Length: 511
Image (cartoon, rainbow, N blue to C red; front, side):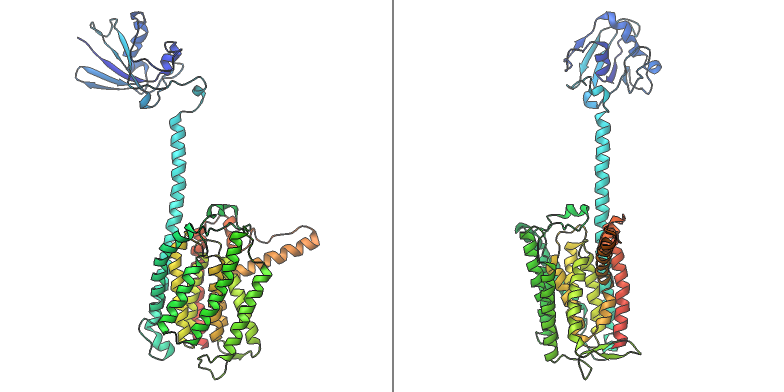
């Protein structure tokens, strides 16, 4: 009666015994002398000598799989098994039973390289591979979670904006005390959002083909180097669409929308020149003073146009600022053009400074436009349509600008959005509601001013500059504090949502 025992083992045990010391490959069949049978009788005592072995019986045939053996176990080399691809099966057969001498045949399943002397002291390849795989999957999981956070930020922003505009449309007749068209604000908002989101799927690949790729700013954290090469100048397509939708809805008959659209596009041209020079000169665009000078010029021209144009207003005079009771209407007279120019410059640069995280500036601008649309609705309903349309354009752009962004708005979009908000406030005098609704933009600009002033002052007196923030603007300070990018954006959305409700309420009671 013949019994067969099959075991899976590694070549290291045989190498240590000296049988395969001069060969890197195991021959197809190796036969051992019967003089060695005494040694290999240990193989028949798996249940006594080898820990962790498993024996499975198939009728008369026993199949044993050896897992491990200590190096110090009774003079036998360590059975350090490798992968299944390196497995070797050997059959021991005997005609007289387990105690009789028999022929042991070593028969490899596959050809496997034997470990060299240096590899014996290295960890197993399996452990390194598994560890690397787990680390890679962990990184992918974190990126996936951040992407999910970006989607959730967009969903929350769109849901909040839609519900708020729908509620305002239902109560518009109480606010204006005049009959308005159904979905007065919802219609331009949805049309702009859908058109911009669809056009984005064409423009994003087109901008990538045209190599309109962003360059990492020197003042940005080093971790933003991964964003280098992302297409930029997204304001080229979503800003004109927002202005055009508003003009089409009112039939090109509103002087206020025409003036606001012209100022918006003028600032977009300034931003376009700045972006183009930055790409051409490797992050060397327009100088700060040159850009501010151009912005002041456009703001002054808009003030002159506003002064000589008949803007629809419930008041018998212009150049007034509505404020809540008991202040009421405050006439500033000749200071109104100066206030208008300052509003244009401050809002444009505030949004430009805020545009440092994926979806941050676009989402806050969309909410600010909605707040201003509600605030100016009793004074100039046409400007409210312009604000709702620009808010929809920002939301449509966010579908491509959320984390992780496929395109950036660049200075082309940031300066244009600031000019659009400033134009809405200048046409209606709602500067105070704009200041409240754009609280995040104001805070970002103030953080830069504070950082520069403190650093220069301390450097002058102490010869060593002191930085109040780790990095300005403020959102970079939060990044360096360890807060993740999508969480900063979500917190900014929540704060802005509260601020626009306050700003809209102040604007309504002021009108």
